[in-house]
Length: 307
Image 1 (cartoon, helix red, strand yellow):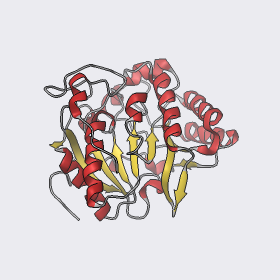
Image 2: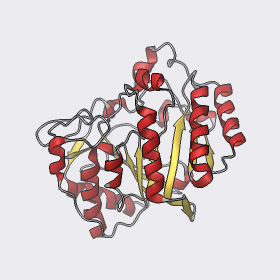
Image 3: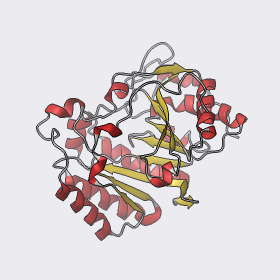
Image 4: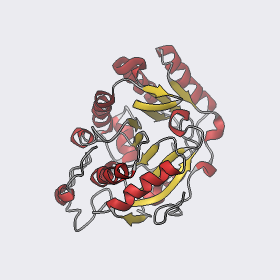
């Protein structure tokens, strides 16, 4: 069983690539996180990739705060607005175990980067109760290598976004010009930690599944990302090409982002992925770009036990 971690490292926080050096024991970092994990929603989520969701859904735990500032963020109420409820590490462990009792296929930790110490401690408490689900680290891809190394004995599946190849797009849309430089190194580390993707009984047990959501007007950037992934990893990883972009938040008034993706844009990127040789690749139908798929941040499942 993995061990607990001392949260004193939060006193000079460098968990994410922002390295803001905030004393999170007495305040909030760039991400909005403090000493305790803040959770916005605990749910069974049926709309993740089939190898993550299974039959009953992925056991999602949505964390508040984020180290990116994506102007199109569909979860902006919790990522930027910090809506959510603070929980102790022990309660976090109970939440993880309760997801197993509900029949979740996996434990799906959404935007977890800034709460890695709390998550490690939560998993320690959960495993003492008998927790055994595959642990999925569902992140933006904007990760420090040292933080990922902390997860070596705690995470089974990495589910990173790979958002941009272009530094200009990354800077304009997410305030992180170094995004590809950082995320490419992070994904290499993730693959090194887990090895080739392994699926058992339809559920991803170990490995890396890289998500990429195509943005309006950026299909060439998407192709550059797919080319890099293929040249680096081939079919040793899984890839999910997402068609669910929906204008939200600051994108509603942005000249390039205020429209939805066209069929041509999406299909051309998928065709390119197939030409490269990807066979372990998930695609979405046009119906994925619907606002009703965005969760409601009710705080359900955070404070009380429901099985």
